[in-house]
Length: 500
Ligand code: FRU
Image 1: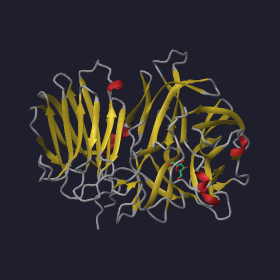
Image 2: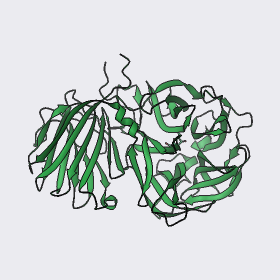
Image 3: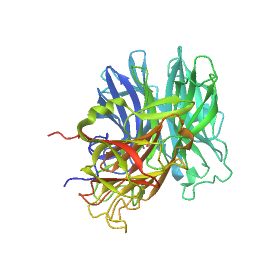
Image 4: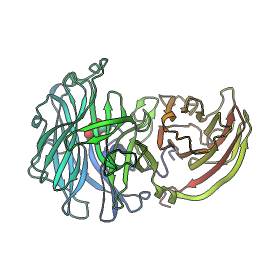
């Protein structure tokens, strides 16, 4: 049976559960993507490291499992998230070895694995684990997701953690050779929000956890707006428990700590989580994030009848623009455009819905609106032919309001069956991102079966949708308030998984 929700050009394994991107690295002329993976089923369990690589960021080749949990070892209950580096010439993974203790407490230690230049066969280091939580003079509720970078001859390491009865934080270590580590203090700690309480259903072993910062990523980015010499600023990404969102912090790094001058959301709260960034040979900083399922059963839950669970986001380029973190789709994605379906300029009459003469569920749309006359517009995707204002039919609607600068996604009618997304409304505030110098506003929309990624003004909104009807493929546009001039470009995108 064909699976109408399975993406055509996003990365995902053939079957099984996938969560965080891990070990992102450009090596030997290829992009390597490792990922948290359960090969045995579509639920989070028995976490391995899956592996794929690509020469062009859009066509992926699956490889054998990179890391497997081993009974009786520190990683017997899972090989959790981590990163990849070249240690001299040696490809090296640093990962979290995870074991459950009685009462649901978690023992997490950090370990290494190495490979030859193929990056295909990994050997766990005989001296594992190389770092444990008691190396820090703090009581923490978890110790995971190592992220490595190099400064001169020294390796630096960020580790995600949470203080017992305290907030999330990122620990900072240094080393000369990855095997022995010196604790350098806290890279950054969350402010303690007074209303943070232990999670009501937490296992007894996790009852002391209030906040936790997972999957730290730390990077220097060129920043023309920086007052500092050298014109670069440092950026930390963290994925937060219990908020389950991704925050970024931009600021000054003195070699020990980050002093943030600005913070913001990376993508919107929802399916996008646990992004990891890396630099490629050209010096660009790229990132991928996990797009969890958002079906009726809740975030990450398997959908009935589906053998897979979880999708990787498209690759995004990270830059700093006027001090803020920007994400734009990697230019390589343009190689997916195999047919231009539409390219027209049009004036949208206020209040009149224009159904476009184009259909599909593997599309890229670029909409460029003239700001003059822009009050409000709506873009409806995955519309069924019987769509009516009175609520019949299926559609997924993006809505932009110029006055508030808010882009919102309404999924309340995405699916006529009861498998609708459990969150129906998602909001992206663009008010702070406007620069008032451009006469237009451009929206780039990637639609891929159940995946939607929208980019505008350096911000992104990712969501999952599950239309129940095979003919929910229509697209419609509408202006409200005033007539509105728009250029619409739509491309059919390649099915990179189609072997035929
Ligand atoms: C984030 C995360 C990481 C952990 C991994 C386990 O989604 O919880 O902190 O290493 O997933 O799969």
